Image (tube, rainbow, N blue to C red; front, side, top):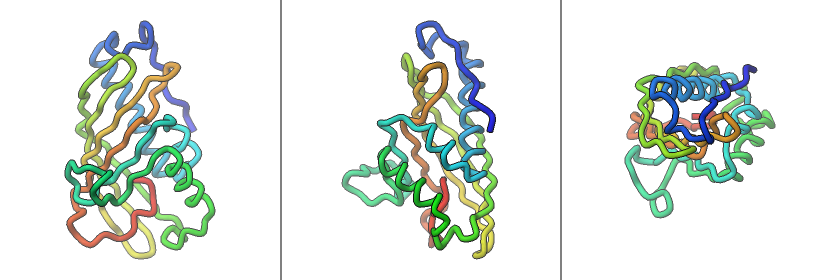
Length: 175
């Protein structure tokens, strides 16, 4: 596993970075996160999260209030870790054998940049192959990344599935 690229900024302030350099570093982080998920490197993926992290897949693909409306996933940091530990047992019926995954990340846009945090928008396409067959998952993602000791960490990942209006097989892999 390759380590993340360390980001050097004055006083850990992302606003001091050249916009091209910021975009490059964000893209490299998103590609790294996708590779960890696709290769089932659960411990590596789990290690990317901050303690206040939220992993969210809205049920309707729209902006909703996850506290009052149904979500496919709405995990805090503790629940993210539990999900990872369950995946690692090898006893997840829908992941025996594990899905083969290939993820494309595109249309990366930098949103709000604060001192040590940045909001990022990106599209993803996940190809899943398993015993049920092949499934393509398309999503519009929103990330909140925090710079900690020169490396990005996940604070929030929201995955709005484009095709969630159709019957959905289980999402028993990392989206």
